Length: 179
Image (cartoon, rainbow, N blue to C red; front, side, top):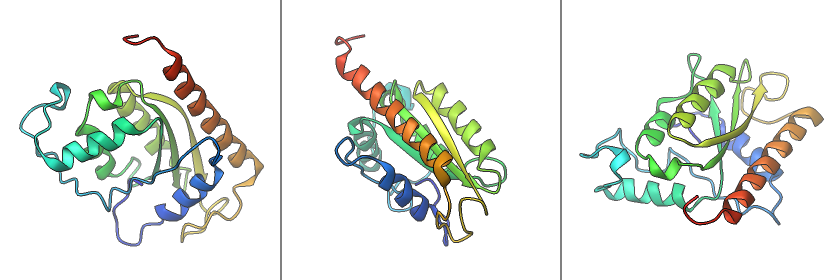
């Protein structure tokens, strides 16, 4: 989850996303930026060099590297994504390379601007953004974050995104070393 605000609703959206993941195909681990000790970037060296000196950076790098695929759940704040997810992306470089990522945004417009902006940033660090989904108030979410009527269309889009992530993971597993 990318929001760290008090009263955030991302946990409910994240729970719904996690419930859609086939447990025979996915082992879901929630990485909640509100629970991860990741201050604003404080490493001496550039992330591109991979010389992570701080324990929090090493732990974050390990969590991302060990993930086969990632679904970022993000709200839209002021027509973009929250600062904590930008900070989390900026901490690393090589760990994002070719990492299959999906984006689920939520907000009054389905977080369209946040999803587009985040996809741009993730693409810049060479992540493989395979798709995105927007959930809107009040059609699919209550203001307290309950997914009330995602409907067949949103559920189908999420399922398709998860299948695309699984295909990318499979492609990476089959790729020859060094490719």
